[in-house]
Length: 91
Image (cartoon, rainbow, N blue to C red; front, side, top):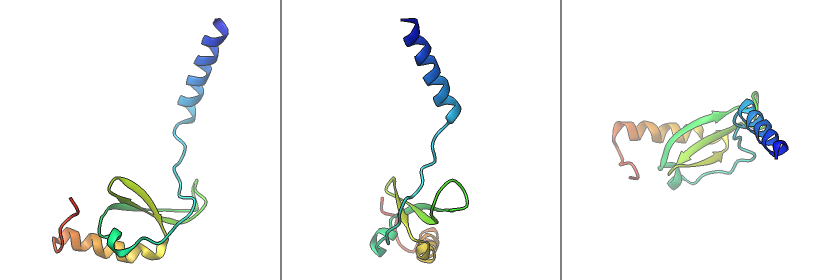
């Protein structure tokens, strides 16, 4: 019984020390123009850090999609248009 408690404490300690593992894109795929209109937010994943590839991470309807970096310009244009109020948000 004591061994189980010790093992449990070691596991909890290990998990709390390790923190959360990075959530990296492992591959990318182009996202359609229609889906780009639903982008809520985005950020760039760099291969210089913990992740292996460069990627454009798009948050669409609460989900994370990994797109190639060449899609950054269209996403920036769409975000700018949304902020100007030229077309409605998907909600």
